[in-house]
Image 1 (tube, rainbow, N blue to C red):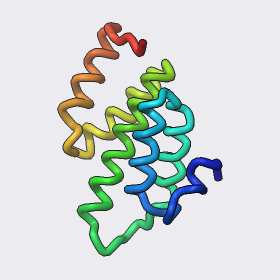
Image 2 (cartoon, rainbow, N blue to C red; image 1 turned 90 degrees about the vertical axis):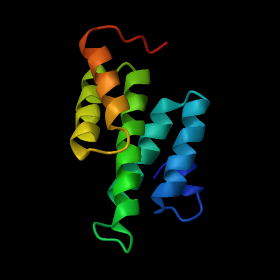
Image 3 (cartoon, helix red, strand yellow; image 1 turned 90 degrees about the horizontal axis):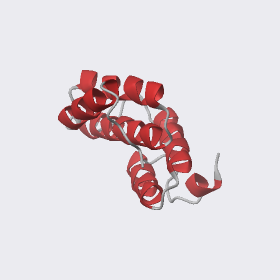
Amino acid sequence: MNEAYSDLKGCNDATNAILEANELMQSGDYKQADMILAHAWEQMEPITSDEQQAWTEKADMLYLRALCAIKQHKLYRSRMLLNEVINMNSIHKDEAQQLLNTIKHGKWYAG
C-alpha cells in the first residue's frame, strides 16, 4: 500500500480515496492519484448497505482514473476506462464521451 493512501482515515473508504486523488491531481501527481484510486477500487466490498453510493463512487473512480491516464499520456488505457464509464451510464457519461471523441480524433493535448 502506498504511503499517501495509508495515511487516510478509514483506508477502505472510497470517498476518502476520491478526495485524496482529487488533491493529488490538482497538484499534478496523476500517477499517485491513479494508484490510490486503483487500490480503493480493489478494496470496495461487492455488496454494501448503500448500493447507489457504491455505484456512484465506482463511476467517479473510473472517470478520475481515465483523467489520470490522459494526463500521463496513456491514451489507450484512458480510452478503455472512458468506455467503461460510458457503459456504466454514470453521471460522467457525457463528459467521458466528449473526451473519448477528442482522443479518437487525435485532438487531445494533455498539457
